[in-house]
Length: 364
Image (cartoon, rainbow, N blue to C red; front, side, top):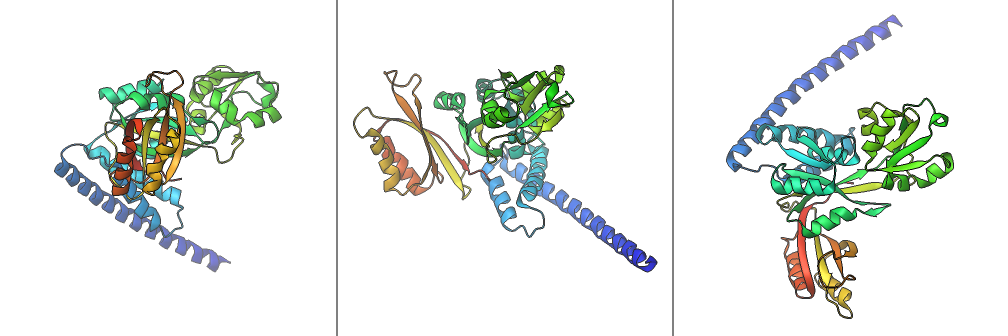
């Protein structure tokens, strides 16, 4: 028995020596990578953040990942490496729809890593204005949820803003019931954003049918209010629970376990081709029979795959209160010949068309 324990201790010592050696090699290689990134910055003289390049790196890394680390862990590690290297040359300022502790903040950090400066803005309009004015480099806002549909204010702003979409983020949304109360029977009210209340509707009906539900501006605001009231609870994400030091009494209470929100990254430019892209645009149909059919025909003729089609009131475009615009996502980059031809044909049969940008398709 003693010999066995001695053998294990010797093996542990060798394993730890191996880990230390690899850690030293990793640090050396990270330094070399940072020096190469620095030289890239010197050559490019300007905006060195390239969404398409980062997407290509992450795609290559995950496709060649031998394990045992899962794909998500590998992506997170390399995202942080790229984030830190970029910060050496071009510290980024990122606006997001806040306050701090929201899912949008989590989405922004998932996309950019932790190196940039992240600033919360209390409205979606404020995020657009911050990017348009140059106060920040990029903005992150929600655009649609898999169960509750589109975020109307983001679509309305995209219709009139000069900003473009240069990236997207898909974030699995896990809702948690949190409080400073010792147990559920001690709470007397529930705070949350209206969308989160809707996403947890069935769970709440089963477990807290008589608890008053109070809609507030954001989940982070709900968590802040619950932190100040020992008889209140909130529905929010883990980041808000950590920020406001709340206990999670029930985790993952969303009705749909696949509940996902899609966020877009706003900039004064879109992204170059990455090999796995999506293009968004908004257009209006002419006021005549078969107009919507005519709108889709150029996409069919050029074999362009459509992943999203949504109508919304025109809000200032057109002369009728009942006129609509259509937000459309298609697969591919607008610089690809067949997409460029399809968009050119489309311009000839619509009253209005605005390209919102091409960008790397988000990982799931």
